[in-house]
Image (cartoon, rainbow, N blue to C red; front, top):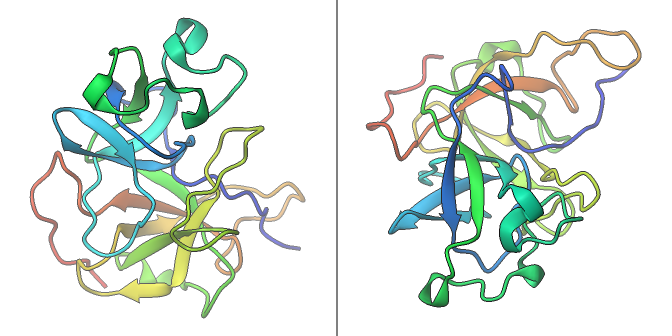
Amino acid sequence: MANDNVPRGLVPLNWPNMPVHAYRVSTAADIYLGQPVQSPAAGYVVGIGTMTGVTQCIGVAVGFAGTLKRGLATNDPFLDVSDLTPPTPASDTGDRYVFVADNPNQEFVAQEDTGGTALTLAEAGAAVDMLFRGAGANVVTGNDDTGWATSEIDASSVVTTTGAFLRLSRLHDVVNADGTENAVGDFGKWIVTILHHQNKGAPVLPIV
C-alpha cells in the first residue's frame, strides 16, 4: 500500500472558510493553484519559482478573477500569461487579479517528494524547502488541466533553523484512495505553514 501521488503545491486547510484577498497581478510566468506568491512592490503579486531559504511569501494562489476571468482565458484553470495583454504593471489595465490565502497563520497540506531520505515524525517543527517536479527544482510547472502546481516538499532540505521556506507542523490525518492511512515516506502529506510570511514578523526558531 502506498500514499497517493498527487502533487498540488500548498492546499489550504479548512477550505472554503479561510481568509482570501484579491491582489493585482504582475507576472511574466504562469501562476498555478497552490503556488506561493509574493508582493514585491506596489500591491502587485508574482508567483514564486524558487521556494528555498529565506524567501518572503504573502500567501498561496487559490483562484483568479471572476466573470470571464476579466482578461484571463475562460478555459484556463490557471493564470496563463500567454493570454495576458499586457502582462506587466507598467501598462496594466487593472483587470487581472489572483485570489490569495494570505493569513500568516493559515495551514496548508503539502506532499513530500521521493528524493533523499524520507521525513520522519520526529522532524515535525523543523523547516523545509519546496521544489517543482519535472522541468527542474525552481522551474514553475503545473497541471494545465486541473490548474494545480506540481510542487512538493523537498525531503532532503530539512533544517533546524529558520533558513528554509516552510515549517513542518504535523503529519496529515487523511486516508489514501486504497483505504490505508497517510504515512511518512514517499508522497506523505504534511501540514505546513509559511515560515517567512510578509504579513508577519520574523519567525522564531523551529521546535525540534
